[in-house]
Amino acid sequence: MSLRNRSAHSALLAVALAAAACSPAATPAPTSQAPTAEATQGAVTLTWAFWGSPEEAASHRLVADAFTKEHPDIKIETWNEPWDNYFTKIQALWASGDPKAVPDVAFLWPTPKYAAEGVLENLDPYIQKSGYNLNDYWGGLLESAKYNGSVYGLPRDIEVNVLYYNKTLFDKAGVAYPNDNWTWDDLLAAAEKLTVKDASGKVTQYALAVEGGKFAKWVNQNGGGILDDYVNPSKCRLADPESIAGVKFFADLMNNGYAIRDADLSQAGGDEAVFLSGQAAMIIQNTSRVSAFNKANLNYDVALVPIPKGGKRWNPAGGAAWVISAQSDNKDAAWTFLSWLQSKDGGEKIYTERGEIFPALQSAANSPAFLTDQPPANKQAIVTEAGASGVGGFGYFPDWDELNGTIISPVLQKIWTGEADPQQVLPELCQNVDQFLKDKGYPKK
Image 1 (cartoon, one colour):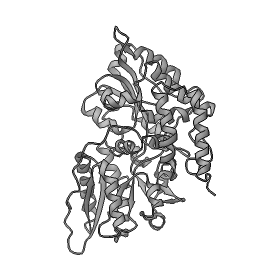
Image 2 (cartoon, helix red, strand yellow; image 1 turned 135 degrees about the horizontal axis):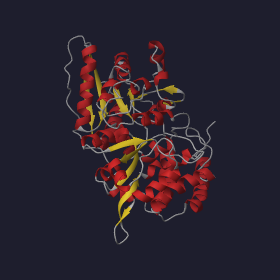
Image 3 (tube, helix red, strand yellow; image 1 turned 60 degrees about the vertical axis):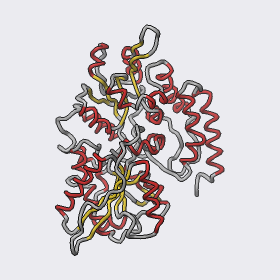
Image 4 (spheres, helix red, strand yellow; image 1 turned 180 degrees about the vertical axis):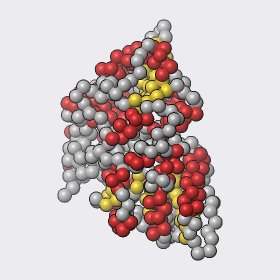
């Protein structure tokens, strides 16, 4: 699933500026596949690029076949690479300058980065000409696929983080299931009862497992933020009292033994692994985990993520998007395919029915394709969290990766390990962020 893999690419961006989830590495997939559809005389052939496991590639093939059945004049060849190789290889194709080598349609993240490099087609003219409905997308989601105000991609799904909980472990501990009114205080009270230690004091069952990259959930719920603007920032906000309190709440969950530390979670195989094994009673994650938990027949459900008293619901509004290559020789046909992929009765329906995504389109999320009898039972929690996405949920600027990698992430990692106190280190962190932004000429005029 795209959410799982995208988060691995940029854990902090996906959550802080979106993104994503972070998660275990993607299941290895075969290298570039030979064309899977033969071009017939007079038909247009499109090359469709995506990353993912063999299972995901099989789903894409079903989608391609369904499209070709409706549009027999457009044939689809698939180009599939493992996540680790995908971006390097697709960039090499674009760099070749050969329109016959580049994919016509591709799956991409983050879209603004590649739009800035000039390799993507501006979709505004196609949207306007066809009357394609952008209002069906969740609030703020399309910002993750825009550059300089124009749309360069159509997100397939949306990063929606919910609270998964193991009903069996809750029952064993005598803890009532989470409800829509749970606050941080309720979460702490439950965590105390759900944390199990052995005779030596070692934790054998954590109440919660949450990736460190999801810290922005706590920060934004509490009215804080990372930067004042995620597209054209002028200053750091992590030293704001609301931001410090959000980071401290998350850090204290780890320091008190209620939540597994970020590094330990990674070594244990990620949140999916510890939830399946019963090492954690709750996790906070996007919908990419649903299929695995259903396959394991796990006794679980999902709920809204608790918020602080007086706080607000917040979700990163980002999703990997389908794009058209600027070098494509078949842009009109590519748009026909792209707009079908992102339609309630087209690709969005198929991916949603297979349980692989929480759809980018509100109409698909409120349709039988999503509202099935399959677990989780409380799908309304996912819909409600998606509704909390909006302006400020995502942003991207060219220097983010450097800023995060050299200044922000190293300090946060020390907080997650318990080596640093948020109240002591975040003010200095913000000073360094502000200097970085100043040196790079932000805010841009």
